[in-house]
Length: 196
Ligand SMILES: Cc1cc2nc3c(=O)[nH]c(=O)nc-3n(C[C@H](O)[C@H](O)[C@H](O)COP(=O)(O)O)c2cc1C
Image (cartoon, rainbow, N blue to C red; front, side, top):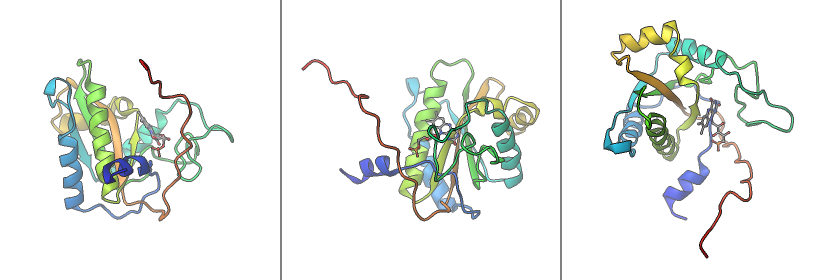
């Protein structure tokens, strides 16, 4: 395996962060990686909002958590014991896990590939972050985070067109735990080789 493949295999979702902010140079490198992600039709239509304001991130993270209507974890069906998600631990207050940096990817509402564009950019962000020793977690429900009064007001204030919609968040920060969480074992039968 080479370094890039190892980076992909070793990256884990991090939900426990140190409060200190990542450096500007690190952020810049991560954003460059995002800007060079593939985009449908080479349109480069996804935009990335960087928020390092703790108060705003706490308010938006609370809205994001409130929008979670998924199944809560059980003893046998859980997301992560080491780095619990909001489905694992109802006491967690923010869907952003108090990460010092939260990126939100916005893309056109009426474009078939908006979610895909945002997700490939998010993957570049997470892999670039991991290569720099920075933890990350992809967080869903961005449409809900920005769909209400606060989110819509902020979207306008930040000059993001009404035709755009928030599609996905990525949290960033230095991991609080020195030991990374373990990957779950990979499920069998997910690769089907044909034509032999
Ligand atoms: C589309 C997508 C949405 C996700 N949404 C959330 C989320 O809202 N909150 C969260 O804590 N983790 C979220 N995750 C992270 C997954 O829980 C995580 O990738 C999974 O548990 C596997 O762990 P790993 O990333 O450490 O390999 C999301 C991941 C994907 C791909």
